Image (cartoon, rainbow, N blue to C red; front, side):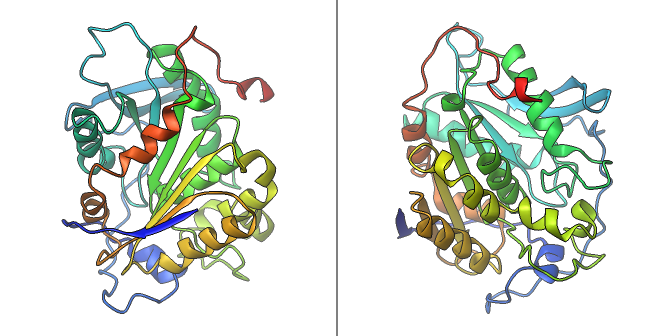
Length: 325
């Protein structure tokens, strides 16, 4: 486990609903921004915009019986080469969409590749349905987890030249996406060798009653037992033996972010479980995703690079866990 402080700059994206319904009020420097209307969640994102070299794509989802959209970024030499590439699955925050990572994440990945810090990778920007927390909703209306695990990952491995095994997969996200990265990465250690949680919206799952206006009610309703069981903290405890020494984990959060205590809590749990991980507090950053990534700079992708060293090129393999469903 490693803890360090770093420096840099930029700005954006505070999630007031998260701050108002679950984050510890530890941030003394920033007040939540006024609430904005939540965008409509659509499986096929109507805005086909694809910034910064990404491509708007869709796949036929068997779980839903319909098409679902995503964005993909391919490394510069993809069309000229025949080799296979690892994949980073990037999960956006609440109120965001698949284009978020194209503006705040992809440019840093591209710069890290050009600088030789990170090997060439494919980036998949997931449509997280605005406020899914990347879980299957208890009412069955938004089976986000199943869409990703059962359909999106097999589609990506079948469509692109991927290193189709856990050593070739990184799952990363910011805020709600950080929760999602921890949720999916800790629940399916056979799928992902690397989990990166940035300013994770790791809301306290032990609330007696999730407020109806809060983000977790829309996912779990009144099912408190499931709300606890699906939390990254509990999944880490449940699968500690599968994670310990086998999964590379990084947790980062801004020093002024109201979610810092929740991320520190997960850091402490992993430490107690003997699960090695990196933990980083970024100075002078509130809940602002572009500023956060700008502050990290390209050197942070050295963590990703180390994680991918064990990935090996080989014949296309099917996703190991899908036969279980």
